[in-house]
Each structure stands twice: as C-alpha cells, then as structure tokens.
Amino acid sequence: MARGNQRDKAREKNLKEQAGKKKANTMSGSEQQKAKENAAAIMRAKQLAAEAKKAEGAAKK
Image (cartoon, rainbow, N blue to C red; front, side):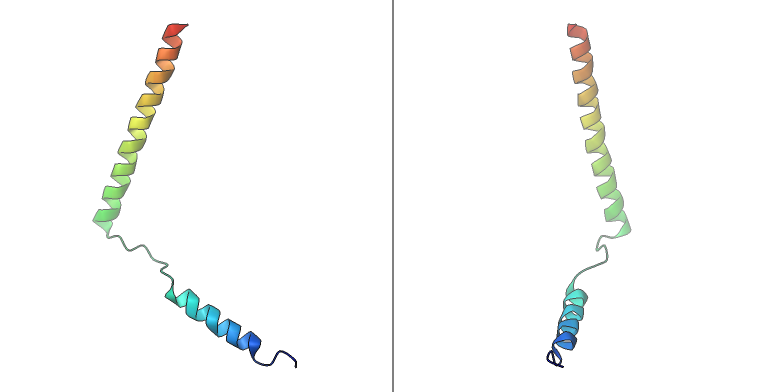
C-alpha cells in the first residue's frame, strides 16, 4: 500500500470540517416569522410597482 493512512487522515479531516459547519437555522420562530413577513412586504411592493409600470405603459399606447 503506497498510500498508507492518507485516505483515513483525509476522511478524519473532512469529518472535522463538516462538524464545524453550521447546518441548522439559528433564528427563533418569531424571528423567522418576522423575516418571512418582511420578505412578503418587499415582494408585494415590487409587485405593485411592476403593475403600476405595466398600467402606465398600457395607458401610453
């Protein structure tokens, strides 16, 4: 075996790196709900702006 324990060392290193990464959402339920509401409000504003722009374009024709 020319590789020795290189494969085992690489596996251990990868497991250690994976354990260090955050996987779960750190927001609480109320924080997550507020974030969803803020995103929804932004999307509604964008949609209203797009509809107004479309209506303005139709009015010019």
